[in-house]
Length: 482
Image (cartoon, rainbow, N blue to C red; front, side):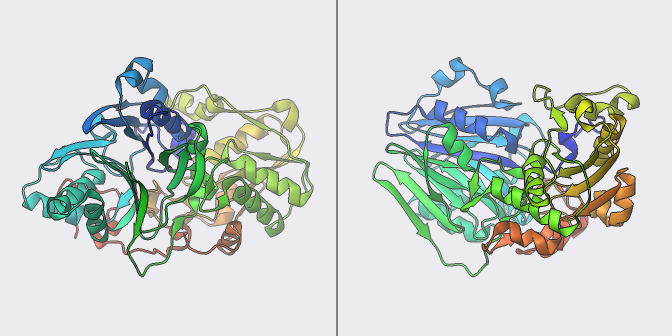
């Protein structure tokens, strides 16, 4: 990211991408259904997007940098005719933000054409990349999705079917991956054995849909069927849908930050409502460190649900104290430091007549570097707030993520450098509290099996030493520290 971009959203954690796929029975336009699905998944990635369709074995595609509405129009969508489609929205956590890294990746090999959309991050991409290079593979991108595509293509040479090739490739992949894959005749969805990233199945009549979140099913008129299980491979073709589960001895480890921040509030992931999980985080915070106040507010958007829960538990009225300008573009360059410092006011603004003279509890989802919180608290106090008590609906970030979440190295995490009390002072808050790691488990209800490594340091899948030494490595270039 350009260091001069200090947009509120840029300073938040980011997820790598969202995927979508549809096998149509003929009554649904795959291109338009995918477009609608990607619109609903836009929050998962705003750097690039793409759609690939298959028309009786012939694949065509369109992808570009920017938002879905910027990359597609009726003329483009009308040209993408076929019976199947896969789509993707991307935020880069590995590989650069350039057009060649946009997905879906479309590759032609000895068995035909393969289109693949990937959500996640391989932790062994470097080793696989080097092995493939030594075997003569030529890489056109710098993303690990291309490594996955090559692994599947190599297995397909000897495998009796594309789904068998996917099943053979999965044990060789480490890290997180939710995949939607399109061959000339079949649409396949696959989820890594840990289930780090969400993936679900829906139906529009006899058409089958795969998507990262249930909100995308709603957007294209699909009815939710079930989630793709960790380690499962689901295949759809003219004979219907079938699935394969190969036994693996690993625990389910869905990224808990999906519930705190990433997922859209109207989604249901692995049977748990994102909205209810966020409200529960707010309720737990109200019990954890109560404070006397006049009103509770939430930082748009993901802080609002937690604020409602905090209000319900504490009895302090919920108010809309901050307004978000939803029509601002993804990024905006500011030529001077003074303009950069004022940038949060372009995206967020306080309702001065609402907050003036009030003691406020402000809920936000996380603190990464601390810059954003200080600006928002200052904005509220400039608008006349008497007190601002900061409540964060996640624990402090103490560890980087290697599974596809853009949580930086320890050097850039404020909680690794300062105590909670010091963070509160730096944020200009009158008090501060993070959700405890113990309470974090309670937002999932009775469900078990999630990854909270960025808070606890307990990584459910092994991390190579070179990744620990250099989290932001580019596997397509030699690594000096092994």
